[in-house]
Image 1: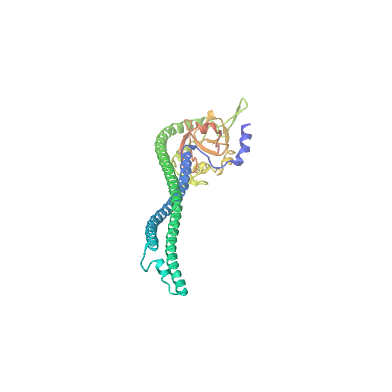
Image 2: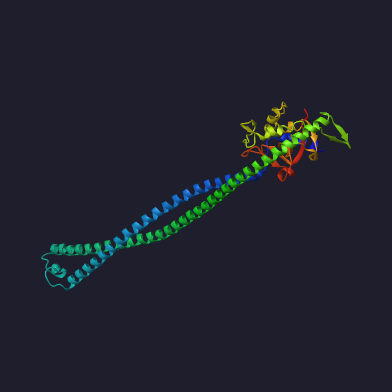
Length: 358
């Protein structure tokens, strides 16, 4: 039986899950916001890597300029030293004056003087060779260093380009997520505005219907014995509702924020709203959906009257029926006390109804 099945489920029952329309959009907005925070942090790291790579590239380019200057100077020194060396060699072998190497050697007056003269010529020649070798060595070192810098420059330019591409990619992705979030927020605002207008229209309609229903219930109570039950074909027929007046009380709190565990005008959860509204007519109900299911008598969906308690989602949610296939309830976190139709999600998760009899 349905009663046994849902009674087993009420252990897990509690606050409402409610209609997921606006709450689903809010959850989506929260997910996108979290992605934006992650992307923003990643973009900041990408910016830092790009800036560091750019600074390193600028230093390499500066070193390249310095080495190019050094290389030009080395080449100039090499040319000058080569020219000077060639001129000296020519002078040594062609000069006939007393300063030539030959005259210096032949002009020796003694063996000791000859040795000294030869050492002098060799010393001068060695100095020339040393100067030339030094210039050549400098040129080679500068060239080698420059080649290394050219390779580093190429690699660094590639790294800078990769860092710039990564930064641009993250910036583009962040922009898309920010536009998506703005769109979602816009949709939420439109949904909230549309729901507010719809709730106002529902309230006006419900108030007019409530006046008619109240009169009808008053007449029905005059013709029926309160609390009496009759058996017809094995089915239990609930007595007429004597608490249709709670609908008018409940409508006073339309727009009150949902608060988990709330049972006062400062904020309600689903069972808290039911308990508070019924307390205003002297009926004490437990502040728990599963326990409220065990109060009163069952009533079929076709016999629902204003003031009946309607249950959904495996006894996870409860509201007060107001007639016309609608009920008033506190749906879920982020929402407010509102009027909803017993269609869609509520129709698919409907469990049953109870009528409070005293």
